Amino acid sequence: MGYNNVFMPPAWLRGMYTQTILASSRLRTIGKNPMLDASHEVILDAGGGVRLQGFYSPQRSGRTKALVILIHGWEGSSSSTYVLHTGRYLYNQGYAVFRLNLRDHGETHHLNDGLFFITFLDEVFEAIKKASALSQGKAVFLAGFSLGGNFALRVARRAQQEPIDCLAHVMAISPVIDPSKSTAAIDNNRLLKYYFMKKWRRSLNIKQGLYPHLYDFSSMVSMGTIWAITEAFVNKYSCYKDIHEYFRGYTISRDFLKDVCTDMTIVVSRDDPVIPIDEFHHLCLNANTELVVHDYGGHNGFVYGISAATWYEKRMAELFSKVLEIDPDWKN
Image (cartoon, rainbow, N blue to C red):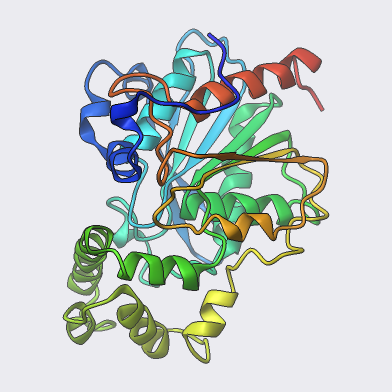
């Protein structure tokens, strides 16, 4: 089944909050998931003593089209609905799937005594290189959501200097471009602020409980905004001068992607309550990057129905199939 160039959900699903909430709704994970049945844990050496967790689902038949690596968003995990739904869809299409957990996400706080900072690209890049080796010479496709989309874009740029074997295409769904604007957008939205504050406070409490001799977040978790907690977190536990220097460390600036040779697709919506759409119009992109802008979709949404494939899942299947048609074996 093909995809339509324009995402047009049923009228009752066009609200930006409807789309955003459905993206993470557990209703969409109901039913059998062969990807999970085939999944096993992999602990990756990400360099510098850092360990990152992932879950690898090879095709049980042994006949694999290619490998897809998925990166969740901030305070999400390899078990986030949008990751499980996408992974199931692509697994059923014949792909092997690797779901990466960023540091201190999911149930991984115990793996590293150090804290998670979004600027720590080195460990994510190294983990993706290690995970890519599981493809055994077949094509590798990388897809990230929200903050994971930001990581995916930064990985694509880093791969210009440090190639990742068989990396064929990178997709970013609702990627964070300017974290200062996205943080302000969340803080100005009561629903989103409550959602992310609850998840981050839980994460910080888990980390403190595991390493009470290293961390005390008690004053931070009582603060009322994401911005305030981030500022205190950066000031106390990072090497950054201030929150602005920290945010600049993972901002996708105007010229950041202009020289990336890896084929990329960026999918965004004009009604995203987290990522202002004007940020994408200022990016300098080359012919290898397709920017797809929809009127609807919210944040990470693009949902046609509770159990239906999303627009971007269909787009992934189409794009990945075209790559494999050019070189079915994808051997180096």
